[in-house]
Amino acid sequence: METKETVTETNNENKAVSNFIRFIIDRDLESGKHTGVVTRFPPEPNGYLHIGHAKSICLNFGLARDYKGRCHLRFDDTNPVKEDVEYVDSIMDDVRWLGFDWQDHLYYASDYFEKLYGFAEYLIEQGKAFVCDLSFDELRAYRGTLTVPGKNSPYRDRSIEENLRLFRAMRDGEYPDGSHSLRAKIDMNSPNLNMRDPVIYRIKKTQHHRTGSIWQIYPMYDYTHCISDALEGITHSICTLEFEDHRPLYDWFLDQLPIPCHPQQIEFARLNLSYTVMSKRLLLELVTTGLVKGWDDPRMPTIAGMRRRGFTASAIREFADRIGVAKASSMVDDELLMFCVREDLNKSALRTMVVMNPIKLTITNYAEDKTEELEADNNPEDESAGKRMVKFSRNLLIEREDFSENPPKGWFRLGLNNEVRLKHAYYIKCYEAVKDEQGEIIELLCTYDPESRGGGTEDGRKVKGTLHWVSAPHAVPVELRLYDRLFTMLDMSAIEEGKSYKDYLNPDSLIINKHAMAEATLRDVKVGERFQFLRQGYFSVDADSEAGKPVFNRIITLKDRWLAKAGKQ
Ligand code: ATP
Ligand code: MG
Image 1 (cartoon, rainbow, N blue to C red):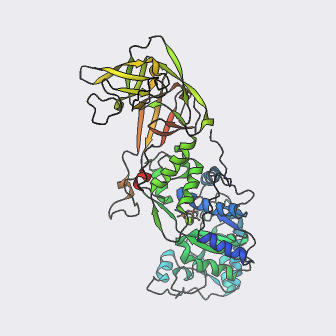
Image 2 (cartoon, helix red, strand yellow; image 1 turned 30 degrees about the vertical axis):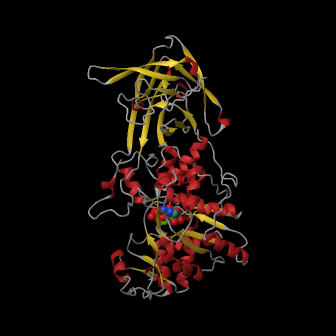
Image 3 (cartoon, rainbow, N blue to C red; image 1 turned 120 degrees about the horizontal axis):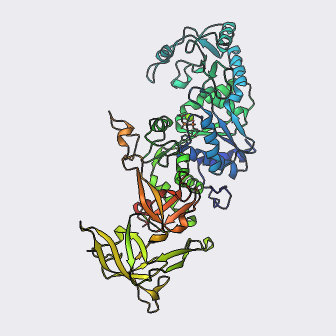
């Protein structure tokens, strides 16, 4: 099963790389504006978390950890139409899996509905909010555009008493959805559209996953978010850049209301990753239309998908550290994420041998009834990983691609009459390739050198090629699921006109291999265990495995496209 990974100062190597947010916090602590740091991660429970959220989680919880403060997990559950407990549960699961802990600080914006309502009446009493009867379309028309100023609502000058009466009637369910709204009274001429008398409450006669049918009206995000932050004593409210234009509104609400706390909103650039999409709407569509097998499909950029695929939490945290935090929007190369995963697995994954595309290899000078147990190290990078015994016999399987009858120049693998090493075993030489009637090679006849046990000889002669193999009578058939990028286009925000993201789905994003054969030691693996299949890549045991019938996800290949691109390999 999953091993629990926790963030400690040491496994994170204390790489508190400075960034502009840390700079602001340091300044606030020095000046005495704050004595500690309180951050929050505020997901809306309308989908599963993705790698972009992981960036935000690592940032917010990471700051709390480094400044010995705290980070709240707060569900921003103000839209009952799209939200669901399934999402709440998955989000908590994913944050924990990433190695973070909100301790006692789990909150729901819906816990504040009563208070938010009270503050709305307060705004009405102060003449700062009014009930508006404009329809959704009229609201939009009155709002104006960046170049055209807005128009005051004809309902803007209602008396405080009338506003209170109407707002209470809205609350009591006397009006249908969309017929009335409560709006802040700010400035229809503001160059900032968010300040043009924004809606703060709308009528929605929908069951809420936590408050049931108590409420017929729901507060808007901008209104709810700043108040929730202030009620919880958040010091630094970190969000993505698209909220920069909402900051004046965030501040306006807190300036009007009698709450003795005013957090600072700080914006940073969201993560964009190449060859994938991160819009929750599109991710949901991929799931509901069956284009992927679920939110945890290993091709999805979701945390649940990456986790099922076999990515480690520490690799994702390392990725978040490496990409850093900036103000400017950019596209991160997905190979950087892969690089972090590979680096981490190289240290921890146990080595094993699996032949993906087998061909028979018979060692004709090896006794028919003999079986040997050969010692193999589990991880050359980590001696404490120990050794295992691998069965060897006369009848082996190797990769079909590892033999060539007419080898190209520089071929180190098996050919006729050239010697190669079988990993952890012996030197062998092939003397005949047996063919079927169609001329297809079906078996390789070889001899072995008994003196080369363990992969070396006294005479010190060198062989260049080393092949992985399995013993045919002992091998276990396994299913391999080989993943590639879900999309074929680097920048999925640059979809051509008239096309949809579906036109860019990679038809080869999942290839299933049902003829692979594995070392006998892989018969009894546990879901979530990770291995390096020698020369093939890193694999994890999928939840679809049955006793004695393992299913493996390829987490990643061995070849590093990122280092290669960076000119480092
Ligand atoms: P939407 O609001 O459209 O449903 P969202 O991606 O903003 O989608 P939220 O649940 O509101 O989803 O996000 C929770 C937090 O994660 C927010 O603070 C948001 O800024 C942050 N976040 C979301 N996407 C990214 C991303 N790609 N990179 C960094 N942070 C992100
Ligand atoms: Mg959001």
